[in-house]
Image (cartoon, rainbow, N blue to C red; front, side, top):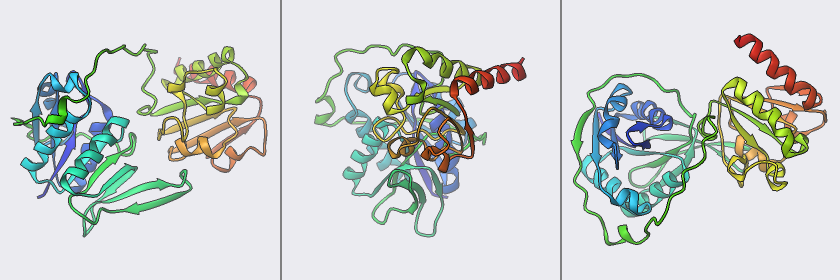
Length: 320
């Protein structure tokens, strides 16, 4: 069976959820071979093997932490040359898409970004994507070279499928460009205790209807009751009510959770482009004609200041 190369996103050996989802998709196409780089790379083996990796290629070097992107591309190309895979899968983060694009240029292959599903096809993997601000769904395949595909978080379930997970050291030679852009400082992101917005299974967002930064506590309380991430529309972010890092939309982050709850958000195309692939969408808006209601699975026409506290109380009561 053909092998499928999976680029591992991990933090000091802790494998992030989007990578485990990639392993589920990789098993549809062939035998997953994982590539883990940097500090803690070898520590990823147990989790990767538990979720289907037949082999785990590892390499650690200071360059991965000290320089931007190119050392990781060099390593991924070395793994590509070693494995000769049927496809290369990469998590669809900002860095992941840059790595995938650079690899595709180097090896002369086509690249697909932000896939939401993958299936095996007679002529290679077939990817599902959303196009034109999620107004259309397309199926796409690469027609030249080995497909390099980035996949959005929450596009597949995390499934246990124990495999050998044999750890193998990868031989990597860095290019001259690898040390061209150096990281000079890092500032740890302040933790909120909530899930990462792009990876969360549930996202609760607030928009213009929240009517002020002081009222986002309502949105946060509902999110915390559900164990969810907090999002915001561009209008709320531009008004300074919530950080830009939490913006959902075409100029913010794209999310695809199991449940998306939009509060006081009209549903402009800019926002829809960032959340339309959510599995279940719920909206609370006092305007019955708001465009968001054309998109939702469940809609509540009402004042969010009445609805959201009641919903939060009901969730907490059922949890208790």
